Every structure is written in C-alpha cells, then in structure tokens.
Image 1 (tube, one colour):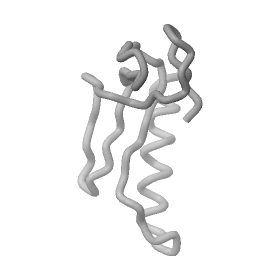
Image 2 (image 1 turned 45 degrees about the vertical axis):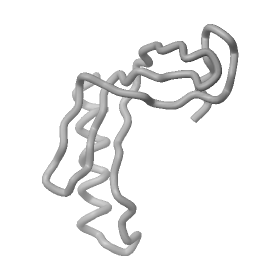
Image 3 (image 1 turned 180 degrees about the vertical axis):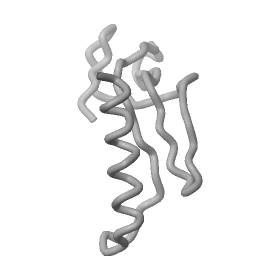
Length: 80
C-alpha cells in the first residue's frame, strides 16, 4: 500500500484503526475510511478508502471467492 505520511513523507505507514466496520459470517472485516499511522513521526490521518480484511482462502473454493467478490461489489455499489 503506497500511503506516504503527509507530515514527514515517510513510506513506513499502514492502517491503524477505524470506527466504521462490519464483520460478516465468514470472518471478513470490511473497514471504511481507516486511519493510517506513520512509524517515523507517529502522525495519524484518515484515508477515504475501503479495506477488506480476510483470512487467506483456497483459490479453488468457489464459495469463498463469490463471498469476497460480493463484499467488494456491495461496497462499490453503496459508495456510488
């Protein structure tokens, strides 16, 4: 994920937390507009995006793939 810190420019950043999320029956978490944090300067900021956090699944498992695609499509449709 290429999210450089807007304060110091460091590339050592990553999602930190979010207030807006849902968890489905399979354990996937859909996080909306998460906050990112910088390792270098400890600055935090909110990014408008959707993250889908899931356990790795078997690429041959049609149900798992279908569920993942439905989660993504729901976010895209709801955002539009």
